[in-house]
Each structure stands twice: as structure tokens, then as C-alpha cells.
Amino acid sequence: MMRPPSHHEHHLVGRIGWLRAAVLGANDGILSTASLITGVAAAEATHSAVLIAGIAGLVAGAMSMAAGEYVSVSSQADTEDAELNRERQELVDNIAAEREELAQIYVRRGVEVDLARKVARQLMEKDALGTHARDELGISEITTARPIQAALTSAVTFASGAAMPLLAALLAPADAIIPAVTVASLFFLAALGAIGARAGGADVWRAALRVVFWGALAMDVTAGIGKLVGTAV
Image (tube, rainbow, N blue to C red):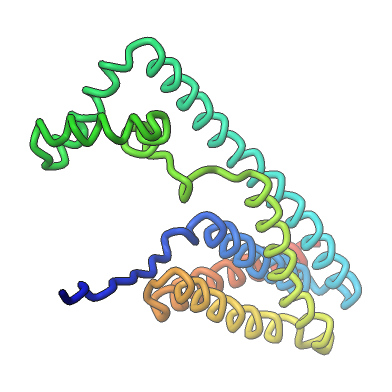
């Protein structure tokens, strides 16, 4: 008897958690630091003042991203824990009703009633809470909130992203900081968008163009405001 051909699939959805935090952190690092540098430079500040502002933006931004991600994802984790505790108690109080509730979920997905009840019973015998968490609450290993991972990822990627326009400002002549930082940052943003899209299996060109457009807009607006402030002062 011939064996059925093996079928291997490689899905990228497991990367969603860390990929979102990494792309967000690096993108914010490049964009916010580049905008800060161009804004300060447009106000006709000295080269050293521009670099100090860039370094301050890198450190403050990395800490802010880490704290923000930790608080945000911790809130998600708290909500998930509360839902799981509630579901755990419901399984203790009335497991028959919970089994029927699970079966009806499968029925709504297209499974016949008798088969749905059989599947619900068998799955709950193996892992009742895990089954309800996945199929009733939508909580799985892939989507579980990880606050520390998100915070560290955001801080490191923000600092890495912010270092790129800061390096461009450091190497550029004092009278060419704005064009040097702008061009370098747009290149880095395009590369980041492409890498993130590639890692997530999305369209590379669309992602690259999207971040370049918004990056250029942000730096242009910030430089304009810096120019106005510098002129007024």
C-alpha cells in the first residue's frame, strides 16, 4: 500500500507577537529620532546641539517604548488571566453546560450536532480549559501576551533604529545634516518595511512605500516647525 504524500506547511502567524513589537520599535526609532534631528537642525542649532538632542531622543524613546509596551501588554495579559480564571471556575461549577457551549461553537462553524458534541467531549477530556481558551475565548499560545518580551524587543529595536539617523548626523557636515539624515532615514525606513513584510510574508513594495511616505511627511513637518521656531527665536 502506498503511503499518502507527506504535507508540510510553514506558517508565519507565530511571528506576529515579536514582529509587531520589533517593527514598531525600529520604525519609531528611525522616524522620531530623524524628525527630532531635522527639527533641531532646521532651527539652526550647532552640530553638537543636534547630536545631543539625537542622543537624548534615543535614550528617552527607548525607555518610553519599553515602558509603554510593558504596560499595554501587561493589561492584555491581566485581561486574559481574568478570563481564564472565570472560565476555569465555570468548568468546575457546570461542566455539562460548558461542554454544550463548546459543541454549539463547532455547530456554528459547520459541524453536525452529534459530531460536534462528540468532539467537544473528547477535547475537554484531554484539556478542558485549553480547549475553551482557544475556541471560546480566542486565546492560544500564538496570541498570548508576553509583556517582558514586548518591552525588551521594543527598547532594543527602538535604540537600533534611532542609532541610524544619529550616525548619519554624526558623519554629515554641519551644513548638510538635514539632507543627509533625511535620505539615510528614508532608506532605512524602506529597508525596514521590506524586511518586516518579508518576515511576515506580506507584500514588500507596499510596506516599503507606506513607511517611506509617512516618514517623509513626518520629517518634512518637523523640519518646517523647527525652521519657524528658529526664525522666531
